[in-house]
Image 1 (cartoon, rainbow, N blue to C red):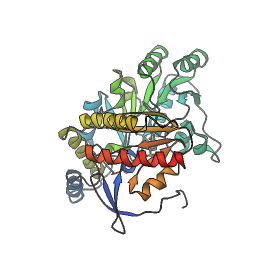
Image 2: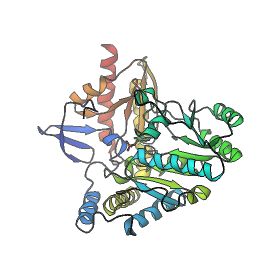
Image 3: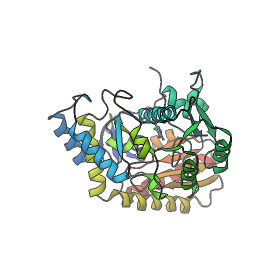
Length: 386
Ligand SMILES: *Cc1c(COP(=O)(O)O)cnc(C)c1O
């Protein structure tokens, strides 16, 4: 169906941060399939793990125990401090699980119309519940009636959440991204998550973090909430988790981990042996190759170099990010930059109309990062001067 306005290129092969199209042209990838291919393209260890699992056992069913799924749950809960995990196949599904969990938790506590606090400019997916939760009219328009049971407040504004607490006794949870990716690379104040945690504790709400984009190393830690020394009640994952193989997860802790009972939620494919083998190897490579440290250093390197090269460009509003997400906000809409970059054999993205977004693979080397900055800065300057 005609759901995408695609760029005029077809990639047929990839290695590390490089892609080749069907005419043999080589491209530098600074987007990683939108925060998915953290290990770069076809990391030898990931390809091998997938091949081996594919020739051993691909799929059984959640009617049975699945060894790799149990190991993956064990690993993710160790890394995060959460208690348990439900596996699905995408970010939207992971958030659907979180929303269902919050509603069931509310009903269990006698709240008839359980309500979830969500943010302006947020993005949680394209299913009916997750597009309702998303703070972007473009993803909602035409799909009314939307779901009830959500209240929306500005992002990075604790006072607005405190006001909801004072006025709405039906709230059961807050669903929030530790940083907003699709919404324009918005990094909240350092205390934001801690203050949200405090409000949730005071009111008996679940703090549910959408780490679909920020999780699995993207922020420079395994999970972005680990920058704030707090523990959430629910965390959702997808994008980077399988290194390119579709897998999502909804993790929970404490009372939230006890909400779902057999029959409450399910997925045919979720957590099958193939996807879990890919996720386990992705986590192992991140650890063995010290990619969290590298993501932190390379992210800082990228932002510093962008700041140096763009310091004299007045229409560059701000350069921001955390770990290996980089946002360059311009004063004018700049969606055309994506196509211009493609012509220069560089893959970047523009989100929220005015924010150039980079999501490089964690394996990107410094000389490759230098090329990304040089080409991007040239394009931005050309674009702003034309
Ligand atoms: C991409 C994204 C989603 C949706 O994930 P899908 O796998 O496309 O369903 C949800 N939340 C956030 C924060 C995302 O970045």
